[in-house]
Image (tube, rainbow, N blue to C red; front, side, top):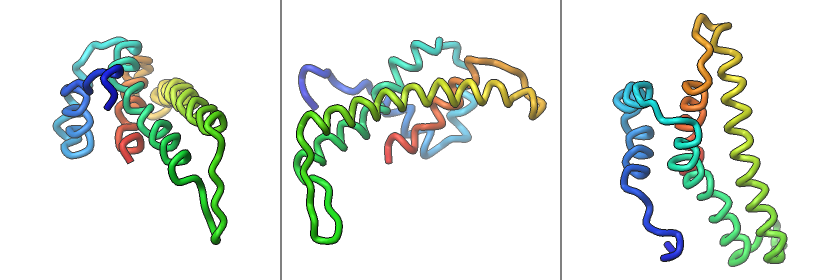
Length: 131
């Protein structure tokens, strides 16, 4: 990791590991937390959502894309735009899915709660962001 980005907080790594490996223990802890959506976004979603676009940017510049003996290496600008769009759309997707989850909760005899819906989507995306 670059020095400019700083170290990855241990709490982020511990939380991600616990959600993937011990979800039955971790979800009750998450339910009891009172962090705001902004705090969850900054401390958890943004770092994890950035993994895929950064890896894709690096991979496309080093290896390019290939199929059936044809290989294409996109320009740096093209790869950068793709990575930024992917990252932004991931964040937008978190908010859209949270709104849908909040809207659906009463239809399944649950309570509408924007923070809990956001937590569900934010922490529920862990495995996908780590894959």
